[in-house]
Amino acid sequence: MDYLPSSEGILKKILERGYQIHPEALKVLEARGEENALAVLESFSEKFSEAIVIEVKQVEELLEKTQDKKTPGTKEFGSKLSKLNGRITQVYDGSGLIQRCPKCNRWIIDDFCMVHSDVEGIWDLRIKARFDDGKERCTLIFKKEMTEKSTKITLEEARKLGEAATLERIKNTLVGKNIEIGGVKLNGGNFLVNDIKEV
Image (cartoon, rainbow, N blue to C red; front, top):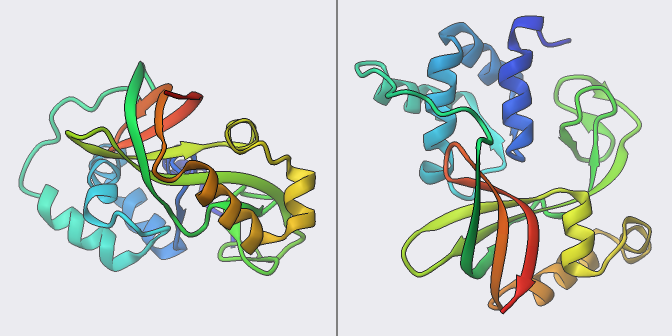
């Protein structure tokens, strides 16, 4: 089963934020149009802060709340560079050493993709973490390069360590430390990290 071309823009935004999405949930979002889909993504991380996979019931619940009101001017994704100071208070499951589908780039487990079934996964590193600056919280997203830089663990080293040991090392390295991060504010309370230093 493949995604329809018209859903590619929505799927790209979902993957960039570090989520997986159930195929049926993607169909629901695609049917409601990009504006409503963005409204759902903006509120998803706040409503379901520890979720990794976007399910149909979650989408329907959020769509009910946006159905009777217009979405006020959606900002362009990834348009604002920012710096934040605070602490990482939690590293979410699904961080560290992961495998991705070679066809759609989504996170997979045991070489099985929810869309493309059995595939040969591609190894990758990422971090999704809760960040608190004392006033508000957001979800940090670290891609491979920033994960390697912030934890001093390369992809090759992580593969030797294994998934559990890599995740534990990431938590020990980042959780509770005062840091300054630079990056891009994303819709939905997410923040794509492109620089980090301990303060």
